[in-house]
Length: 147
Image 1 (cartoon, rainbow, N blue to C red):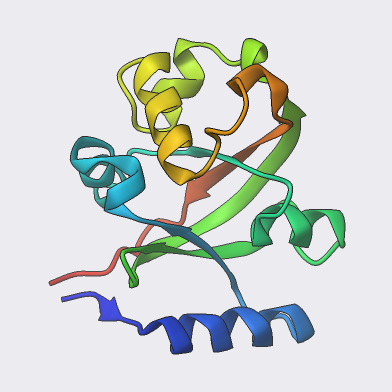
Image 2 (cartoon, rainbow, N blue to C red):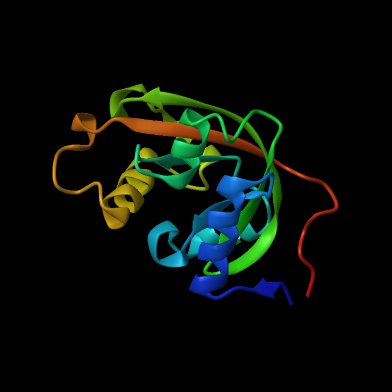
């Protein structure tokens, strides 16, 4: 089975990562993604995530601590499910996203993506009022966690 990490271990790894070249973490939960998208993430079929400005990944890019090509640990429900490479990030508004963005994020439609964003906290204003960050990653072959 994959590595199970407690919240404390993940927090420590993340904090250490900001002070060294330790791999950053991109965290997901089944509660936010939904079961179908979480399954796609486990199968390494997701290559994009939408994040807020307060996200640790977005801040690491802004601070120059995460650059294109750097590795990221992908965590689902406190379990490391693989390693990915950071490919890039851009700032977008909701109306700039399309069905391809939804599919790259593991969703069948923009409506499913919108529901996931609302579950994670983008629910206090219309989605087009938020500044969103589209983060792309590529899975590192051979780094998949095996049972």
